[in-house]
Amino acid sequence: MSQWTPTIALDESSTRPLAARIADSITRDIRRGRLAPGALLPGSRTLAATLGVHRNTVLAAYEALRAEGWIESESARSTRVAASLPERPRPSRGAAARAQIPERTHFALGPAPDIVERSVARGVIALYGGMPELGIFPVEAFARAHRRALRTKRSQLLDYATPYGHPALRTALAEMTSSLRGLAAKPENILVTRGSQQALDLVARALFDEGGVIAVESMGYAPAWAAFRAAGARIVALPVDREGLDVAALEALCEREAVRAVYVTPHHQYPTTVTLSATRRLALLALAKQRRLCVIEDDYDHEFHYEGRPVLPLASADSDGSVVYIATLSKLLAPGLRTGFVVAPRALIDHLAARRTYVDRQGDLTVEAALAELIEDGVVARHARRARKTYLERRDVFAQALAEQAGDALRFDVTRGGMALWARVEGEKGSEPLIARALDEGVFVQRTRSMCFDGRDRPFVRLGFAGSTPAVLREAARRLGRAARRG
Ligand SMILES: Cc1ncc(COP(=O)(O)O)c(C=O)c1O
Image (tube, rainbow, N blue to C red; front, side):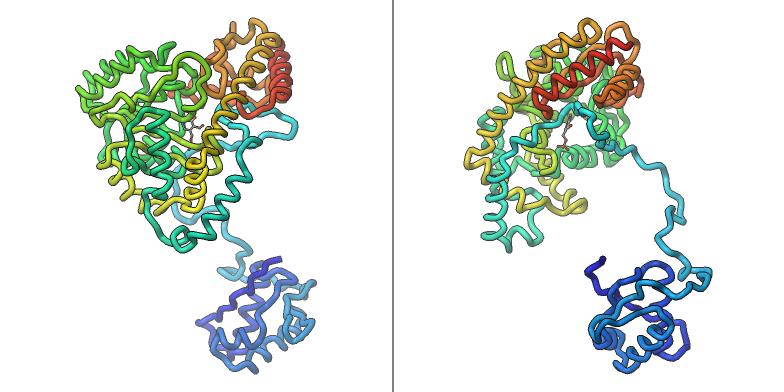
């Protein structure tokens, strides 16, 4: 039952005596369902004061309602809507007759973009491609830091504040990206956002206010495409192969059209997991310089590279101001923190911060202060080491179990980094039949067609391993094996 004392408003158009108008207003709200049986009504003194009438007027209204059986009083202080209402008269037409907000708007509305619902039935193993293990999130340390921040800096954290992000977090992220990712970032080069999705949205709007073309990977991250589209960009998809984005195709596109930006996932291409080759990196940076292209680099799971030499972001080799680097703590820590960041030349950071003011004004500064403390204290570095070790073990367990169970039906390279395997469905034209059979067997796999710009299915599946324990992964592999053999 609601803990709110309902507001009672008078019908200004009525010419009936005041007490009757108060009673009418309450019965109307009971009839339309706004006041439910048992709901507490305001005390007579309070209601009289709110409506600016004499208390006796309210008492007369309540008395009339009580006599008709609409309300009941246990004591002078507790007047409620009757638990069992008198027989309801047929509701009249018009506003008073509506029991609830209409299902649809009365005005025209265009189609809404698709929302990806993330719910699966009980017992189904969901192999989401980018889900981290929340069981190892440093809950205690985070809760302590959050509480400490609120207690010691409430007037700073709960007020309207900077759209750039908490200064301590900007500093901590600048140090982290400089040390680990080679970016030479200063705090003023950082904008803290609500996840990388907000970063993508802000960058897209900054670039495509007046339209323009953006190139993307033909197999890629649909939420980014949605942000570019919403900002007014025209999207051209370019091929992806075992070396990542086809940079020669981008060059050819630039010959034909005025391309303003390119969106890439060079570290672990989404969804195929391949790393953009060194030659293509150089070519892309050179092309960006020559054509004044904006390179939007989405480095969503940087920490999780298991083999080979560390690969630094494109942004670390950019001395011209071509690359806008977008990263997130969704994979490193947890998606629910909604914390991402942009690293870019200061002029762009200022531009994005100004725009952000009109979107959500500022981030959750308490969360940001807590995260800054966890980074400074080394908790995040320790967590990153632990998560990397955990996911490496899971990758190996899953890759081996899948190879045993699915045999030749699913072919894959053991990914050198990231949180998912990209497997080819052998002998098939697409992935949908396998994905459907897998769900029958109790494994949810994201639809491949949602990762393909042309919306057409391909014979590949992206199988996330980071968020499931080794035992669950073995079971998932058994189920996938059965699904694959049933084909
Ligand atoms: C390519 C890519 N970019 C970014 C993200 C993270 O988005 P966010 O930071 O909004 O949680 C994901 C998560 O799935 C992703 O796959």
